[in-house]
Image 1 (tube, rainbow, N blue to C red):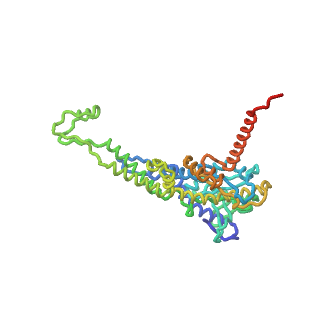
Image 2: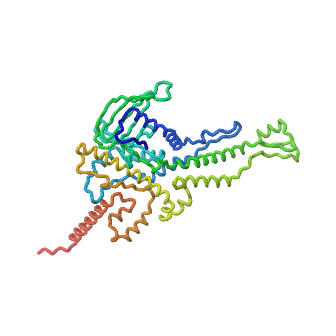
Image 3: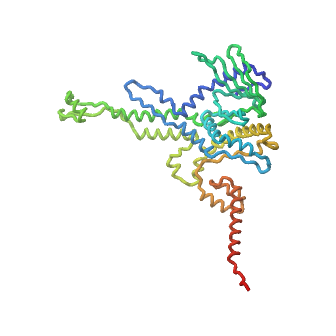
Amino acid sequence: MYTVKRGTEITAQVLMDVIDANDLLEPRFKKMEQYYFGQHAVLTRTRLDNEINNRIVINHAKYITDTNIGYLLGSPVDYKVNDESKVDIDPVTEAYKKQNIADLDSEIAKDISIFGLQHEYVYENEDGETKSSNVDNRATAIVYDTSLDHKKLFAIMYTGNYSKNRKKPDTYDVTFVDSKNVIEYVLTPGKVPKFEEVTKTPHGFELVPMIEYKNNSDYIGDFEQVITLMDAYNILQSDRVNDKEQFVDAVLTVYGATLTDKNMAELRENRVISGIPADAKVSYLTKNFNEKDADTLRKNIEADIHKISMTPNMTDSEFVGNSSGVAIRYKLLAFEQNTKTKERFMERGLMERFQLYWNQLKAKSKTKGEFNVSDIDAVFNRNLPSNDVEVSTIVSNLDGVVSKETLIGQLSFIKNASKEIEKAKTEAEERVKALADQFKEDEPKEPEE
């Protein structure tokens, strides 16, 4: 977190300091991105020229991130108005639907998992629509004040302009945003940095339209703390393949005889040796390896990877073999607790986004009344197989004790409990009416005089 005193004048030096501080994080971000895409340290491993050097990557990093995203956001986030509030959030949710905000949420969650944090920029496009963009952490920074609350002061996005054979930018194109304006600068680094204002445009967001999402309070990615374990796993698997290849290419050793050119030719062509003394001995010179010990070590390393990252191994026979709902939830306890932390931090960002959209739509008279983030809840729906037979039993047992809406909402195939109750009520009334009509038709008619 980069901080400056509130009221600090925005100068070229201030912007340059922010950029320099953010650039220090670039090597870490690059490493995290490489590991997600399978570019692990084992790929640069070297051995002696005559040694087999398989470099195998088992990409636990991608597995950990994708599993966390799928569990957290496999189902889109829902926004529900609190019972006490009368606010109409439809204008905001409609703006979300137009740009498939659920897809953007997944992209942001992926970057949060990889880097430990991610930024979202909210802006107004050329058509006057409020939009969100997932921006690169390596070229984005948010600056806060030095108060205990660390209130947001401004944010910048920057792009370096390089001349030929220059390792450092000659200039930067900087987009500066605070709670009132979007300002474009051309920043020239140097002993005394200089900048030139290109454009200045007011916006109606009333807040700094840059959102920071955190994975946790320490900004640590989901697989960052198990990188050394992943490296050890890759080396172990690579060496196991190396050993097997070396076994196939083992040196033939002959005791008590000397092979002639004819013997060697027979061996190459027919895999048979003849014409050697009866007491001669022929064997391969190989390195002994204990496959059982190697597999035990592999399992221990893999178990540590899942344990430290708090991501379950979904292919583990002990995990999938027990179908009890309680048992599965117990096995998912650490995973669920970690996901709850991720959810809590992500919800803060989502509420900030909702406020930004509301403010912009309010400025265009597309919303009515006052809004506070406490008026709504962001509901995260876990993407986990559900035992609806077990749940339906619970629903039946609690009928009359708990409200129908709460009970119906427990079923995984019900998306909107209140609408489902209304639909069931309507269908019941239609059935009663149909039965009444049928009864009238079946009534005996009085004989005509």
